[in-house]
Amino acid sequence: MSKYIFVTGGVVSGLGKGITAASMAMLIKAQGYTVDMIKFDPYFNVDSLYLSPYQHGEVFVTDDGGEGDLVLGHYERFLDQNLSENSNITSGKIYSAVIKRERDGAYDGESVQVVPHITDEIKRTLYTLNRPETDVVVCEIGGVVGDIENHPYLEAIRQCRGELGKGNAVYIHITYVPVIEMSGEHKTKPTQNSVKELQNIGIQPDIIVCRSDYALDESAKKKLSLFCNVARECIIESVTTDNLYQVPLRLHEQNIESVALGKLKMEQREPELEAWRDMCARAESAHESENKLRVAVVGKYVEKVTAYQSLTDALTTAGLLKNEALDISLISSAKVQENPEILKDYDGIVIAPGFGVRGFDGKIAAAKYARENDIPCLLIGLGAQAGLIEFARDVCNMTGANSQEFDADGPYSVVCNIDPPMLKKGAFPTVITPGTYLSRIYGEQSVSERHRHRFDFSATYEQLFLRNGLVFSAHSPTGVPEAFEIPTNKFFIGTVYNPEYRSRLLSTHPIFAEFIRVIKG
Image 1 (tube, rainbow, N blue to C red):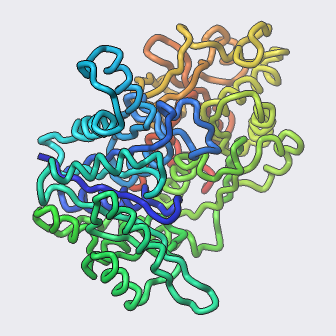
Image 2 (cartoon, rainbow, N blue to C red):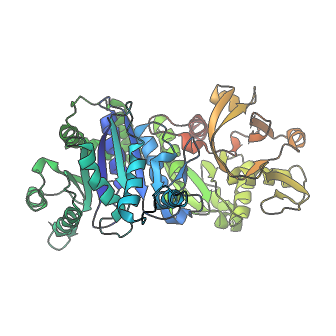
Image 3 (cartoon, rainbow, N blue to C red):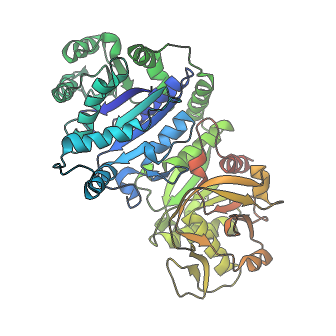
């Protein structure tokens, strides 16, 4: 039977529950255990399909087509393993399932209520991860204790301890410990109140992780231990850091995973953390470096840094693996449209994915500037569509070339509807064209890549593009183009799929690795 670790948050949102949960899972996996993860989000969207990146950052896609917020990406990168659509569950999914059961007559005429029917559905979903091959499941509850939306989840996990039995469930509560600047004193009352609210629900936290901008003194830890009814060694501090990769190591220094495993009555082993420490050392060195490669990420959601979380993480990791520090700038495509010259001082350009016509002309302008000035450029998703349209208009003289998304009756639909119309999402096989730059990058003839798009490159004009110097270097098994390159440029590659979803912290995607190698050279 799987053991469970439940992670909740208190005082304020945005404390980094996801990073803490991912760090906890990584540290347990580093001891040789098998780990799975799940997050319950209290909002009523069924999934992240229609969520704006301004709400919860990027939409992350799993192999099986599951869509979740950016925390799912943190989980995969920290754990270095693929998760599934069952790893991100919303209230929309839970309530939809219960309503469907009621419509199917599954409740024998009962009045359907939050308790027990909603809470039972939450537990049923949670227990689908209870498998013989999984030693530990780390479960994060979104929102903050006290929010009306997440109360059913807290009630459900309260019931879990009784059902799972003693020694099979651990509760970790993450809170904010503010500091009064005038006195430099940590104030523990917000944490005490948050824990009391959790206790009123019936949950006694086993471990408290204290987020703060400054290290906690011993008196503050003793006070929290006393008033929150938690052993002193179970008061863990998590001080604000610019380097998220350091979080697991800082928690490990305080034996957080050993404390949790002890409460779960599991053997404590020596964790394998050498590769992670090496990556963190490279990150520290990169942070202090004065010579950084400048990379521009051109997109339209640049006001929200986390809208491109997987993309910036993939670039950063690729740099670290090449011992190169990156200075990544998020640049509005609207500003590029006004003045493409703002890109002139960058070593490399990434034109980011997205949806919708807003900012699209700016992506076209960025692609044109990178192509004409031979600046290494990686184009992804809608960014790649912009690059193909720019090439069609400017090089192939296809006046009016566009995407069917923006001009359904245009003369040259070089980007067309998927047949049949759908949102293509999840992992699909991609066949690499032999002899191309992309084939040298992958070193394989067939790969699996994750997609999230509604429109494809059109195969109709493939020969015309080829005659003008653009090569479709990857296709779907049915012959639909999925990637292109311009061989005469140092690096000009566009992919309709999203390679950033495949990047990990200890082993980046080969396209990003090659991109960094080229701009470094």
